[in-house]
Length: 425
Ligand SMILES: Cc1ncc(COP(=O)(O)O)c(C=O)c1O
Image 1 (cartoon, rainbow, N blue to C red):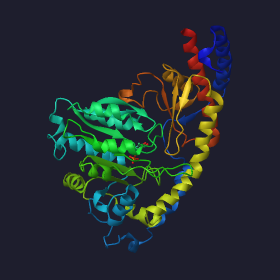
Image 2: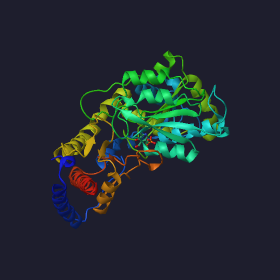
Image 3: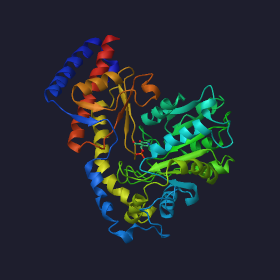
Image 4: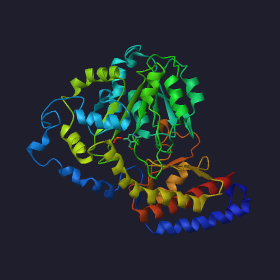
């Protein structure tokens, strides 16, 4: 049933039917939360044994004999640097292992840029009259919040099936105020896109007007396949080096969605010279991050292959949820003419585009019915979705049964909002 081809009378009849279904939902007094990409308890329970792998004084030492209970080693213990290096395809020398949050490392990095500038650049960004950052949209709201907090102006860049629209990126970097870009290159948040080889190479070869230009490559979902097939991503650090721009990319990741979001381990990787520069400041921020937690992760996983293999357990839990979301969208909105959605093969989100001008109304109808979604607009800088169309679905936290209910409610609300708009038109 294509809503966009219905007559006004048909729309009015359909609206009444949808309103009846919606009233029934209101009566059910639901309370369901699909707002954030948090693992559910079952996923957290998967790594409970990691909490007991350090079972005595002798177990607190790293391979080279460092007592991990004590101060020191700002860049992380060697075996943790190797683990993250292997995951990201770089040498341990290219890695700093930090605390529990990669977002924290990203915030710190842009703060350093503001205060001190980047090597080879034009000095502290805070002295510039303007700093701009490119933001592929839809994207991750917390990236945008970092820029907003630091006073960095954001410019939307549309996403394509292969990553950000590189024709537009290549144009925009001619502006000397553009200092960088956010990228979530694998299973992007929210649409699950994996950047193509061509996109990665074009990033490495970009010719920005600003010598400060950096790429914030947030590889949060680098090993988060949900289905069987692998999704290799070209190595941005290698490609930048090949293109003669070895210091351009900063790569971030963490085990937030491998072990515990509240108690995982995060890392940043870049050229050796960038790593040295980061450490020159970081060594005054901390005498060392939590090395016992690094050790716990090493003892639990053994190595990168151990961690990759373990991700299959998460996939087993996530797959039925993604299937449920995608099947419910297809069953209810296929051929409706009022919605399109992504088909992610990994990561944490599904991106739904409802009829233009209807995302806020859809989210409001859902909220009134007790189903909380990520706020409409959140996937765009400043919370402004210019077409008011995008809704991020986060299937992980809810149980399968709750997810089924929430998705049915979402589909009814998306249709009701669309019909209301079409009748007005
Ligand atoms: C793209 C992306 N980056 C970073 C994070 C947060 O990472 P961390 O927990 O390591 O700070 C998230 C969490 O949802 C995310 O989606």
